[in-house]
Structure formats: C-alpha cells, structure tokens
Image (tube, rainbow, N blue to C red; front, side, top):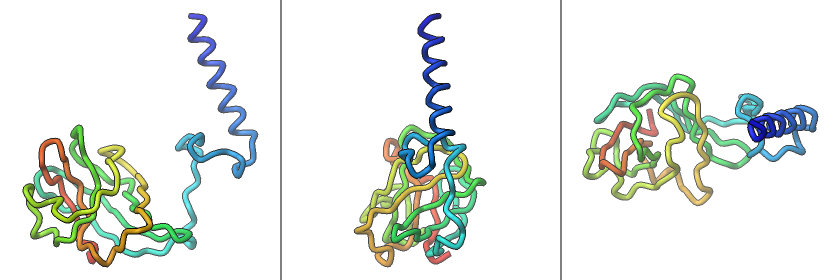
Length: 156
C-alpha cells in the first residue's frame, strides 16, 4: 500500500511540474499525449495523402505525408482503424498497391516504423535519407505472418 501511495505521489508531482514548466523546457518524451501540441496547418506542407486500401485485413481511414521544418512525417488520421497483430509495421514500397501481394509486399521496401496502435491518430518521422520519389505506395505489413494488411498509392 505504501509503494502505491508513493507511486501516486510521484506521478502527481511529475504532472504538476509539467503543467508549471514552460513548454520549451519540457523534453517531448515527457509530455503526455493529451498535452502534446500538433503543428499548425500553416507549418506543414502536404506531400501525399489518401485513404487506406484493404489487401488481406480490414483497414480504413485517412493518411498523409507532410513536411514540417524540413522533416517528412507520416500522419495517420483520427479515423484510422485496422485489425491488431503482433508485428505490424509501416513501409514505403517501390511497387504500386495493385501489384502488391503478401509474398512481395516488402521487396525493395523501406521500413519506417512499427505501428504504434491499430487505432487512431499517429505520427511517424520518415528518415532524412529517404527519397519519396523512389516509392509508389505506403503499406502496413505484418512481418510475423507475412501478411500485407493494406496500403495506398502515394499519388492517390
């Protein structure tokens, strides 16, 4: 019981400190998602965007790739939903979504990040050395089961 009270007191102290500190002094890793600030629409340049296309599993919602302060960011919309799996990852593929199957889904593809959640808004930074013109599609793939969940062409 004592350790639980100590944990609650520590969490309360951290939250109060975060609320009192100027935002510029708080490392982004310590900011709870409810307090995180989204960049303004004026600060982002839309590079690509579209909706997800089902391949082997249910997937829906909006996505876009934007440029903010020289960084390319994949943004999944609030409406993003898909089936859960243990090893879902986001890739950029050099193949058109119509040509992608389970067996060739990640051939020549560039891994971006594990998928953080099967639901809701998310953001993933694309490494600076990635040339988007070399890719035709964004995909979500389960490597553990070699299943292409779905994707979308970058030109959509």
